[in-house]
Length: 160
Image 1 (spheres, one colour):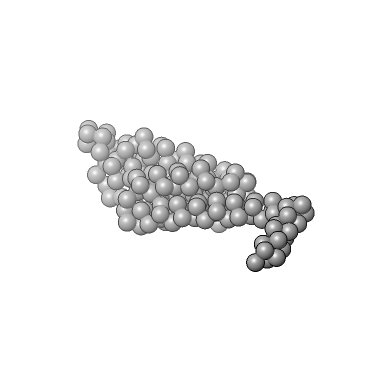
Image 2 (spheres, rainbow, N blue to C red; image 1 turned 45 degrees about the vertical axis):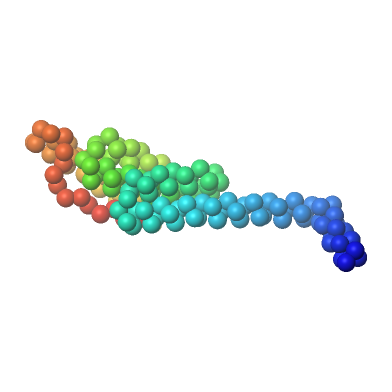
């Protein structure tokens, strides 16, 4: 048993000296970060699928804090989904300020997708922006016509 412990300690010392142990620790840490952000994104998607858009947006916000800055593609997708959640909740409530907030988030997502030259995602986000702008205009028009600030038109489905 003592020989086995000596071999294991020697092996670990060899890894540390060669720098491989540090690489292993970094790899494990990176994997844990990816798993944590994936778990949070999964929770957000479940909330969105259940129609709990406010909670979905909160989970997406948590996920953004866990994603490494160099992972621009994932950041762009999460920002788009967060914007969709904010938009869906705001549209349901007729909240023009939150619709503007979703438009800002969509714009951030669009800028990242353009930087990555991701044409399919660019089209999707542009469609989301067009829908949010249209709903914002309809909400303003309805508020003027009804005089109560609430949009009585039906809500469009976001692209989850």
